[in-house]
Image (cartoon, rainbow over all chains, first blue to last red; front, side, top):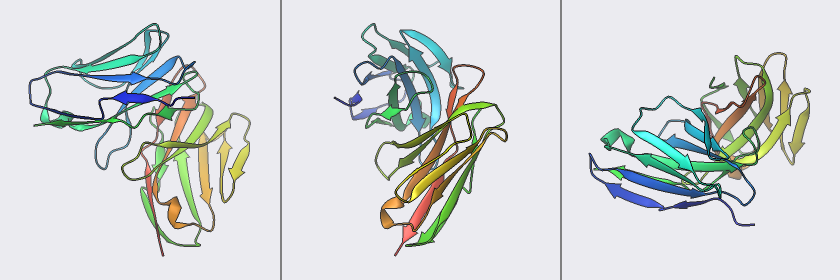
Length: 112
Length: 110
């Protein structure tokens, strides 16, 4: 069974640009959660999607948005990038919200 | 509500034991434990469900006290491979909420 796939693995952007990250969950998993991780910080929850609906949202500005498609694949978008958005973005899929979270390898975003 | 972990960091010598605690202010249905090695994604270790059970495999075990909304991860006879950051994740009883804890950095030295 294929694991969680995140693309791209690395991204370099400049301030003001926007970026879209992609996550393909494990087959059969309907829940996809996104996390931001910066050095020394824990896993900061961004949002969770379940069956194409955003079910939970963390405390991030509106520049961060996401969506989920009918095949459970999810995208995360960050508009008007700021230097502070540089981070590792992790996506995790699970069967349900409180199910075991299976993480992708992450997308490392650098904003210059 | 993000659970709080303690300690924030711990350094052990090989063979020593460690306990990592996870505490929530909300009633919990489940507690998960994950380990993240440097440069890698977090990996699931174990899940404990409401009922106060204790689980373990090899030399890593955990307990869940649902009345206190607390969980503890026990690492015995630590090995170098145990190094990493440990996160608890909590599923709340009241609805579809899941949060990761603040993390505990564990370093095992020879």
